Amino acid sequence: MRKLVSLISGIIFGLGLTISSMTNPEKVLDFLNIFDDWDPSLIFVMLGAILISSPVFYLQKEKTKPLFGEKFYITPLKEVDKSIVIGASLFGVGWGLVGLCPGPAIASLSLINMNSIIFVISMVGSYGLLQIFSN
Amino acid sequence: MNIINFTPIPAFVGGMLIGLAVIIFLVGNGRIAGISGIVDNLFFSKNNRLDNILFIVGVILGPIIYQNVTKSIIPFTITTSIPVVILGGIFVGMGTKIGSGCTSGHGICGISRFSIRSIVATLVFLTTGTLTVLVMRII
Image (cartoon, rainbow over all chains, first blue to last red):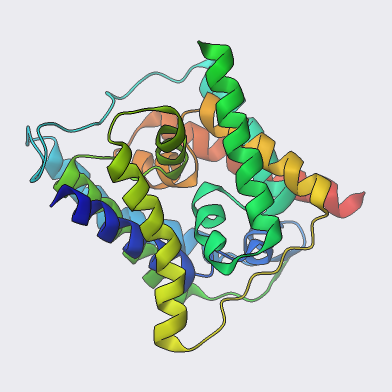
């Protein structure tokens, strides 16, 4: 059942990205182009998602176990630190350069576009490099 | 500032579906649907590997199912040159690993938990993303 839940969550996530057109880098770059021709759609994607999931995160606090697993893999809320600011800054720069963040980059692999494949390889390569240096 | 190509309804509906996916993964498997973490762990951690693979396969299947059901073509326009695409991938990889999350992990799941850390992260990447686009339009 866990496996089916993983697959179904992924499919719905991918459908949501597609319907909201967040898989299109041009649309995301238009969102970040606040000072010129601005497409505010991405705000509505975040609002829709947060509206649905926040009540469930609130109710989840009372529970000790998910339906199909032994525990919740949720890290306790942490303080703001240097790594979050540095990491988020770098991420934003990469996001603004191409218009892809990890979710849409993965979803757009389905379109077999050379650019998204190259982007994902560069991203995963960076994860690997940081993994080696952190060990 | 001019408002262009604004599509609030599909954006909101798509967003609600993403929220639904977040709920199912949380209530069913007890996991946070943060894509950068799932991709990272899929390659570099043995924990929950099959779940991570299936989730990512699902994210890739989503657009394929959409295309087959609606018989439409999903727009994908990228005008960035290959070296900049590589640079962007490196920045997104480094940034989401150092900052432990991306648009989904911080922007959706974190904010839904009212995590101050995630709210700060979201404001920071929105700011640097906006400034990057501004700089790229000038040069």
